[in-house]
Figure 1 (tube, rainbow, N blue to C red):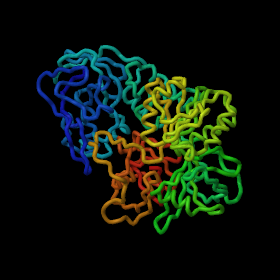
Figure 2 (figure 1 turned 30 degrees about the vertical axis):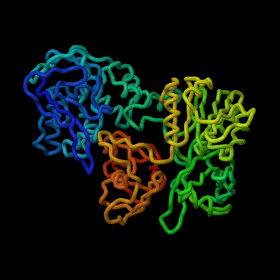
Figure 3 (figure 1 turned 90 degrees about the vertical axis):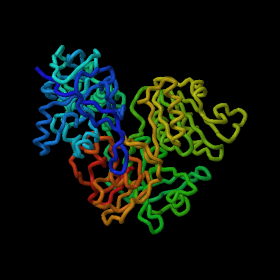
Figure 4 (figure 1 turned 45 degrees about the vertical axis):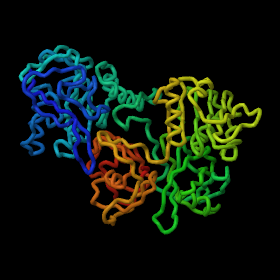
Length: 586
């Protein structure tokens, strides 16, 4: 018979960590006497990051005495007091390889249901002073698990734990954890996992996506708990950068020019997926070469790619491109890449853009026109005025080749000419998008300034589009994901403080920062944070893949080997260091 050894609680607190402040409920301590367990947590307990912990599905965290004993030996520790793993219930028994998702238990007056393994999280390592602990919990198949409260009631140390009912499919906590985080997944177990109603929605979504990746004809599910559970990434057509020749330059508007790029030996170029981008490396002045990314703005011809670049008044690279580059010049180009691509589907399509954001969706429109796609297509574009409406004639002509196309243009500072019924002065609104008759089962592709995409994305969600069918692209740094870290004022990316490094150059292409590597930094993620570059991470030990980043060029080594390697052409910056000069899409 399993036994409840300790009930541990703790309210969230602010904890200093690596020069930042983390709001966390990981600090738990045993309490004496009975405690009421309610639907969301134990009385006196709280969670600091409700996006990853807590809530009805993750109300109570369980960890086992046997795992404590295991880690005492593995880590050489004799200071592991109950609650240090962040658990609410420390139990004798209930091992992760025997407890199944969906099992139901009675403890004291309360009844519980097992919903999922512990979420991999850097804070357990922070609490123990063992930075790799999140990875170790998964690798050693000892994650612990969460309970949902079915019946509220009082519990206390010494209560017996009685099994009420076994869960369906008999997949253990350890098996489910490995199915998400470790390689060599069994397709049959993926299917079984999706038959467990008690499994938390986030994990179900991740498993749907993993199953869809194994069977491409299925649709991917909603975003789940692991960042790598996405559409498979296309392997780059060539490693790093290669030299290409500027075939011609065509002005599109007073501020936008299209650059046609050809192979130096005249050989055909690999096909790019519509929506992908090229990274361009240019020697601008005496500084280290600068890297910028530009969307391919048309379908590839046999011998050229086309990118279109807006001249930003204070943009060092765009100014150089517009003022200096000429046909015949040679430039370094990285292979087409990016996941903002036109998906295979039979659903209606919305191509929505503002300003130079038209470029990737224009490439998608080229593909649709080339195949005379019969699906309904909405082309919705916002420009300042007629003079700054790039690709106006081109897009209009492409739409004319489609049997079911709808064109809607907005000018923010010009009144349309009489008879131009498809042009409106102003900006898209929820009401105007609804009036277009946009179907709620469409796939939407948005590109433009972040505020524009936030507004239009919100309009589309309110209209009824499912969030996972609203795809967005931006070339500035992506919004940060730093769970639990207290927000601070946004700082423009900069060179790291302290003595400059002497190692290979590291370029963060989205942020426009190039700086030499120093072994004083634990990882490429650590260097990015030292430059105040927005970063995305959760476990910081190579488990969750939230930090996955495109490696544009160069080579790295893993300081902590990931439990599962990321897709070709990408790396996990949380546990990697450079071995050569590196360019990251970050």
